Length: 193
Image (cartoon, rainbow, N blue to C red; front, side, top):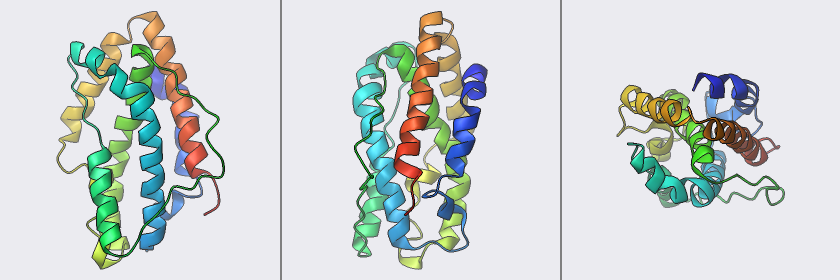
């Protein structure tokens, strides 16, 4: 996992500066803008899960890792927003030209990106509880992952990545997939709202 972290440090840090994500750290955040952010996360996860993670779930299970989709929490947050009258769409500027690779090694790289976002998401969720309008302040399940012991979960993620990543082919595929996953996230988030 150290190699993945080092290889993706730059795109990861750049993502934190993406135009559409910057408002997540503002003192106040409009529900509509937050909804748009969540809709884009949903669009990214749809691609990541359908193209890479769901097909690799049986292989991940054989490695001792049972992956759980984060999309149900995201759907619950979007439903909270809809009840408050906010119906966001993902509406990217153009269809993504970035294809995610598939296979076990690629799944390790995409898993690193999708599960790693839980770590920063917990802090953002705490902040957003006070930054969002009261009717939607609880719509932070996706970012906060309240049902997950993050320390234990991240150790499990690291263990499967490190163990399966000993295979040079898996390691190379993981690096490429993580880079592409970050590029795909940039596609969804690095534009002017």
